[in-house]
Length: 395
Image 1 (cartoon, rainbow, N blue to C red):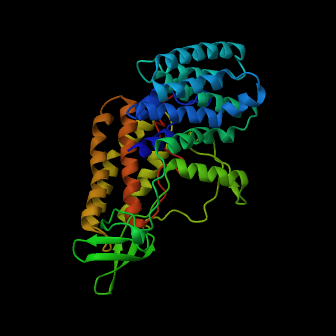
Image 2 (cartoon, helix red, strand yellow):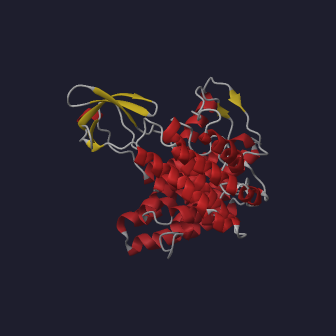
Image 3 (tube, one colour):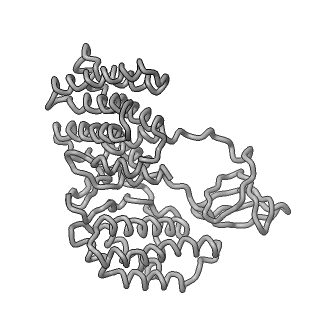
């Protein structure tokens, strides 16, 4: 799912001066429609980096012309459009040389999009994204506002998301067509559902991870559902805006342990829901959380040494059975993803491939958060606690 891959890009740790390598962008966005991807990156350049060029160099429109040439080719696919894009790309090469050391990355990004017109693959697009992030990070370094480093990629992903995943037309729940009920679904008041046992039902109230529904005979029943959560990108942007203009207390994050997706944020007014103290799920969480948030080159060995204990604790969770308010099938399916993820880690733990280990361990992490959201409510998904994303791999 594209949204999950955008969230993954937000969580990856990048170089503090250069950001993510082109391979990271390619791995997560390669299968996106090429025309749509080009439009999204062009919009990102215009939104985030081009305004600075326009303010400083009013009479130099070479980057703007390169972006316009790429858009013209997307519309016409004509030979003239190809020639114009080549000419604009060459002009941007000159612009890059003229401004090297100052704003050359802006010209770099625009030039890459013009060259994308004739490229055989998406390499220029990935180079444009890398140039955008490097330019934004250079601006942060120039004024020594390093606490803003995590916001830069979130800003890029925020613009990409608006183009790649436009919002769906909103339909009020009461006017939407009935949909099958599932304990893993998210529902709103007034929504019509079809239940395998109770038939046609209507949601009358929503509280945390449960909903109250009205049955055909007028009686009510309480069922489980999955609270809606914000994506990593949306949450990061919201917190960033709050920290810029909100009145909440701001808490700096320790940079010695923070990854690329943490920042100075407004403290939440509601703490994430946690399992009962001392329960099998609490014991699993108590071991898994510090393992996930650990950093350093010994991280892989440390986590692998704990694999047997994590597996035993996951088995204890299953032995305890499903909470009475949850659907047994949905509960078992969510827990199975944790169990299968831990089993899959045996392979990487027997080798030396850090990247494979991190990807496999990340799957366990995401599965655990999905399970927590189902069982205890809105636990806070992803990296709100400051972890994740190839943390044991040296730069």
